Image (cartoon, rainbow, N blue to C red; front, top):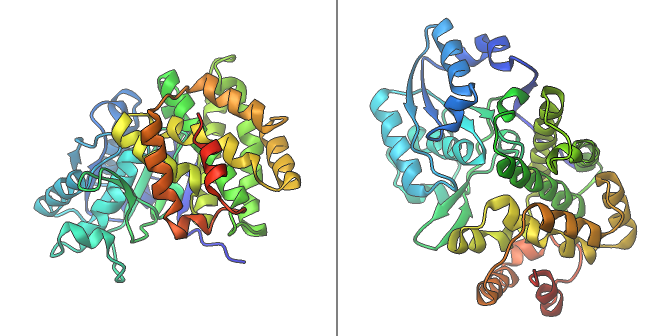
Length: 357
């Protein structure tokens, strides 16, 4: 068994202010990577700026990160970081800015390398990087993974290098202003991470230490996810903690078939990431050993995979062209590395059922 979690995680109200000294100790000029609007609206950007100003750390803001960030965006952020002399990168937002920040931290440190270096396997260092999550889905604040859009391949692909944040600063207050669809999609993503990790061939007692508390916490938050209760600060903090636990889980096992199937749907059909992953989750779990399946479903608050599927489709419905689904399935069936993580033989007939959404 193994467990590797090098990120120092703080989760509390006023988290950034409370740990501003540790944040500031990581560099003298920060490149802040974020999206166009949300970090300004939820207060997270102001909190980071105030913390940096308090300790006389200068900063430059790169706020051009799109949803599902591209390699081209990362290289633009890299160029900005080089010009301003950044020695620290801070990602604020959902998985998109945080993933972009990881990749930019790598490329600024290796400024003589072309973008293809992102997908090389040679050892490399990155600048110190800090994650400030504002959604409850990707768990990128607790993983070394950075998933980027490859326009040349018309899909999304993980960077080969692992870049774990030095610090993750988790404050549930930033989630309170999130639109309901963002809340739902990101919460489904977190659930997918937990379930994919739970059934992975790499799962063990150590990964279960984060999977099952994550599933149980997710179940407690379900009324807030489905909108039957108004989100408050305590529930928001719990949702953020669920996402972090899910991130820790996939940091040990990786993601599996539902995630791999989702990428073409997101790139070619514009389906939000969480919804695209969730569309395949229940049927993927349906073929898992019944005893393990029952334990997972019970922890998450579901009686069977049919109920799980109905919940996800009701919250984040997905429709996609059958030919696109079949192309995605064929790509996954040709991916031996991903197939090795599936706990059962993934035959063509089973795959046909999984993609029948």
